[in-house]
Length: 280
Image 1: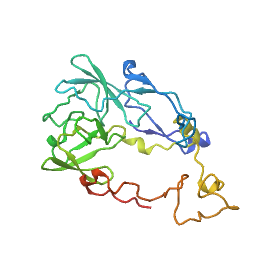
Image 2: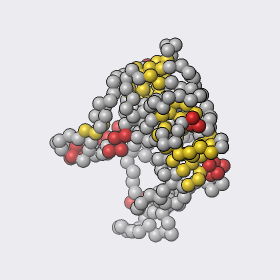
Image 3: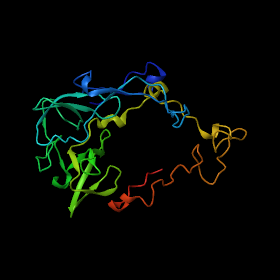
């Protein structure tokens, strides 16, 4: 697992790098755990573009990943580590002792042949094991964490991500998020031990527009380069400043550094310390 750099044989190669896929042990997915993906190209049921910059891309099938792992106290063996075109992390195909197969988000350094288990009680602290976060000691890194018990993991699922368990108090556990935010989770929420696989993903340089087109991303045009009818920043002869009190999106809403979180959101009470501000 790492990033590969080629000789600069073309202008596109000169500034690009690729994933070396050294950790992949199988090239084809488990067919019974895949379904087709219907593409929208960013359009709604009227054919109008509602999400910009979508379209094209390589054909994919969706891998059905088990984010809940509700098969408690049944040991499973890791059969393969696979590439998933729908996420930047690796997925692991596991087989339970009763013969049922499933995909899980693979933790970093998980090996083929390893044993993993999910439970509602305390387990050994080994990567891939899943249990309620209330049983996990302070200082341990976890991923695929639930916001509500048995609703499935939604937090820390991206490549290289992980949250650190800090302390327990009453019915809640304090954790430090990847953003630096300190938040409380219910003790009954399940979490998987380890850090998400493929941490080197952030080091990849895409190099040319063609690679983004293969990912299904269409070109992005600056608002300043448009006409007034197309964007709030548009218009004027030659290069002009935005000419507004603050930058806006194409739909006219404030952009660039404006807080978008609802100040009355019900989960605000669980956030003890806000995330760190990004350095400009």
